[in-house]
Length: 263
Image 1 (cartoon, one colour):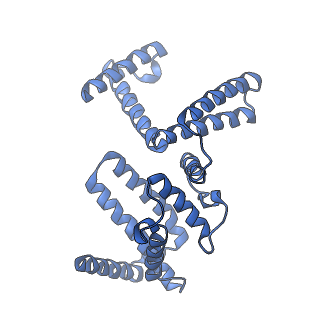
Image 2 (cartoon, one colour):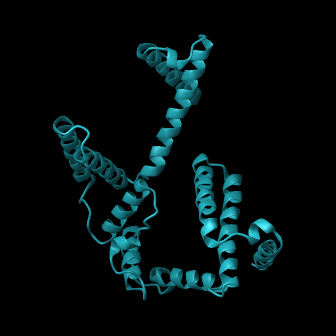
């Protein structure tokens, strides 16, 4: 514990010094930092997704630097202090975990989640509508997932995953009908949105993080496409010069090679 305190004190001393002595750091505001903060979050997600432990450690350090940077700027403007930030989140942790600190309340993960949402709504100054706790700036896929989680926490959810699967089949049928009857219309756009929202719901009900699942598919597609381009180049061709039949054959070959590498 003593070493952690010493390390944190040295870290904060460095942060306050660069804020005073570095022209770039001195010129930053909370608003100007937000783009970099979002970038750091995604770099952390990449490191976690790739299973690169050392990179996760480094990216967590970058995130900590951003937390401290905002706090130092706030201190300069007499808005709040880093101590207030730390005390506030500590109080929140204790308040929202009565099953840990008061030895009462929820006992299962599902009960903990419901208790968490209920306690949030009771907190002084909190918005009372459940969905108002979802940040507007979240990427749409993540936002849908979080909205569904919050709805589940207050009891609004399918009784079992089959309900989500049935709804997904219904939404796909409605989208096909809309495409046939009103191609290019806003109705078609809405129906595809409903498909995506329901697919996220189905994934959630099976314990699958849809953003992570989609990223795995993105990476798989990229690997296969890159290899397909390489195979085409080995034949002295470029993919844009080949017909679909030839591309499909290369695609299947890329899938086979990658599958052999794995297994």
